Image 1 (spheres, helix red, strand yellow):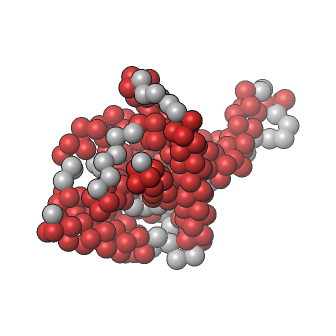
Image 2 (cartoon, helix red, strand yellow):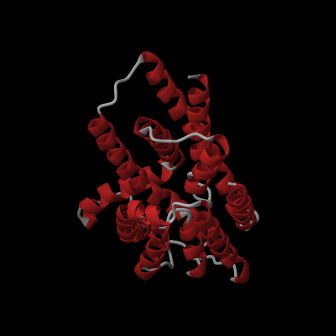
Length: 277
């Protein structure tokens, strides 16, 4: 009982930390299970973790959400009644986000099928190497400075298609979007904000899917179980919040190149485990 409790707590911490890093939670979860022997099948735990990540994300993106909401209300008024005037950069950002959201959400429904193909440790090694290569691309590109003032709808679509690559388990949605934005010449901080905003509908869909899975499973809850899930949600919240703060710091400083080496390091660890097991 205690071991299972500790495994679930560790699983929540790892997932929360990895959710917004440019290295997917999937390899962290898989390697955690391989190294600890924990077999994760608890959809209620998934729900608690996703809720914790979502709350952290909403808190960190609250200012941009308020800006979009304000501009949406103003856009409903006639031109004469708009006071203050519309922020056209925010309006363009919202259009880019809407266009980018569709391919990212569609990719979620291919994830479970792709997971069957990337189910082994060796397959994970290959995907992690590819993830590192994707993250290394911005190093050979000039640092961009485009934002909502000079980004186009085509840029938004291509960024969304980049995020859709995360339909392959092990490829990071954050990492693919950040690299896709770099390819299009976007400013690092700008595309990070876009990636975080794109994560909101993704997590909302995951929460709905988790709720459905929990209802279908008809799992009985105990007081100890409820406390465990509340604690898991809180730990996932803390991990996600720290990860977002770290990513924003790196976006203003050195970028995310260190994570390509981190991804390759995980690939090496996974390969060693593959040889051992």
